Amino acid sequence: MSALILKQFGVKRGPCPVLQNISFELAAGEFVGLVGPNGAGKTTLMRGMQGLLPHSGFSNLSQMNTAQRALHAAWMPQEREVAWPILVEDVLRLGRAPHRSAKAVDQAAVDAAIEQFSLQTMRTRPADQLSGGEQARVLLARAVVQQTLLLLADEPI
Image (cartoon, rainbow, N blue to C red):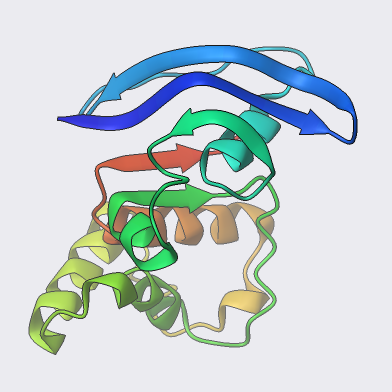
């Protein structure tokens, strides 16, 4: 099953084409890294393919409504400051919102991510009081809790 499909995809900033004629298909379970210098268009590509920027061509993500896209793809943007004074556990629970699952199912997914990302000591801390590295770890855990076919992470390290 394809997690991402782009065909003749492009993004313009004003009248200037920034990206043109990009076509590729990414299967579920594949791992791909976009590498390039600052300003090469990596973030623009990821934002455009989600329909967050005006674009041309085809992207399966941009064809989905917001609810469908949230079930299909998790997005971890480059800006990771958490300004919400809510508990880490509740930040992770936000990743479950698209599923509308039973509370026990959602809690099991959150508990598993807390274990996987070693967040036990942060579980009941307000997310806005964490260090930058801790916030990044919490947001990655939230994306994983979302349990999507595709995880788009902009500058994940």
